[in-house]
Amino acid sequence: MSQHSFTCIQQLDLAITQLEEGSPSYARFALILIDNIVELLIHKYCEHIVMMDEHSSRWLPAQYSVKQREDARGQRFDRKVKLCKFAGKFTDDQAAEIIILHQYRNEQYHTGLTNDDVIWDLAWHYHQIATKCFVDLVTMYSLVSSTVMTPAVEKHAGKNAERLMMRLDEIAESLNSSKPPRRRKLQVALSELAIKKVEDMEYNLDFLVANDPNERPELECVADLQFYDYLHSEELPKLMWGKVKTPEDAKRAMAFLKNTWTPKYSASPLCGFRSQAKKIASCKNEVSCLKSFEKFKADVKYFEGILEREAIALDGHIQQQIDEYRGK
Image (cartoon, rainbow, N blue to C red; front, side, top):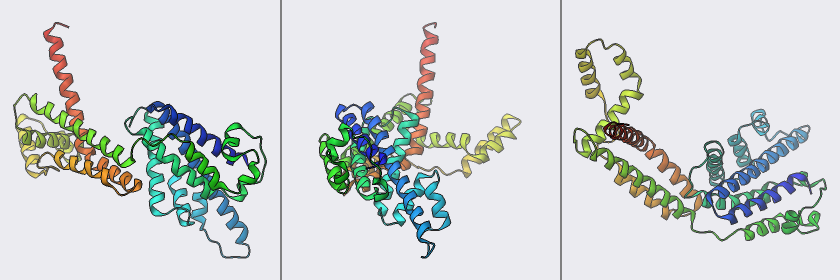
């Protein structure tokens, strides 16, 4: 058995101990460990199939293009997943699932404390995918060299690991059965997080409307939030504002922009977002709920962003006024 195979078993076992701890911090570490193994398995498999193809292409037509061979040895994880799909190792859904979960790993690694409410559920599910990858992607080429046994490998592969490595499904089953019980379905976890996101948006909108200095109704506030975001984010308003010389110029520019601009939302979209969030719980399987949650995040990103930004700015302004009143 090779060090590559040992590393897979050891790290997947270590991820289980992190899941047993139960807290988001340990679950975050488990997700990173699991994703590292999935990356390793996919990378090694891609290297293996192009190496074998290059060898056999001396007398048989090549199965993989020059571009695919470059992808196999390159740095782009998504292209390696695509190559495994081309080789028949992943379905479209399996490939999509791995890409989505890999993105969560990147988010945890680079931005830190996010998704605390669901990170354990995501890591638990990703571990299931990783053990399947272990069964499907470890090749005989990976099993050629012997290494020193460790307690983790013995626990799941037995002392005669050379023999058991021919039965990878048994090792995967041992790893899967060692995990703590699943707390809830992933569909429920992601739906609850989506609903929480909607509740946060509702809170921010209520805060902005309740503290609006002009006492505008919600409908008007929603329109103005979008308009002022347009003024600060699009090129046309920036170009026009750069040519403003007088207050009259400013009025004309503002009137022109308001008359030619169309808001994305003519009313608050939060009711629709809440309905979308609830539907995630009824998705038929994990991959469909992951896709639905990704779509939900993409759909709410714009409105969620402007609400959060304006709520933070208004809260800071109110706090400044309070501090000035108290003489701070």
